[in-house]
Image (cartoon, rainbow, N blue to C red; front, side, top):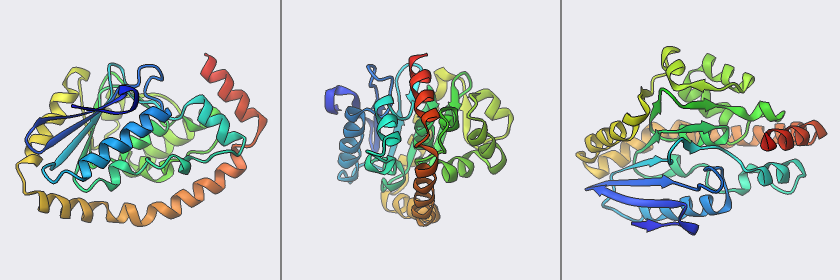
Length: 252
């Protein structure tokens, strides 16, 4: 077992060819704290250097998969001191050489949902909440969300999630026809492990080649999307109402 900074990211190898990354920043409820980001970068650095790994599962703890930016990060973006591209980790799942499965056994909110959507395969929980919550705070989406969420959820549903910023239970998303697996919460990890076992039986070179092929169009389109989202942030993030919403929603 390898533990990240402040032990908020665990990297385990439960079976041959399989790595499991567990996000467990209980203090910050798996928002993108500095310790969580550092731990994720370290974990995927080790995975990419390990030629025995054929597939990766990433999951959270208890009722949290990943819940997006911290209050401090959002205020820093509002004040023009940072942008989401300063946190050089949002492409970790996309850029991983081998397939990644997001086992979203808990809530995935805002940039946390987008982060999970960069995986090659996804497993969601019927009981948990999934939300592209950016507009709830009054600023336009970042993290590549305007592209990756419609890409994975479907264009119409993805647009609805981005515009409304509403919470959607996994069961509702299943009824709305998303193509990802949606199972009971207590079955998410076992379902992901079953998928990982199927992939781990394939040759690593072939898995890498197929991952490259299937992710190439996303990698080609993403830089322009990020550039456009940053331009929108310059116009949408600066308003006083945005800071008020951040303060109010984080204190609620």
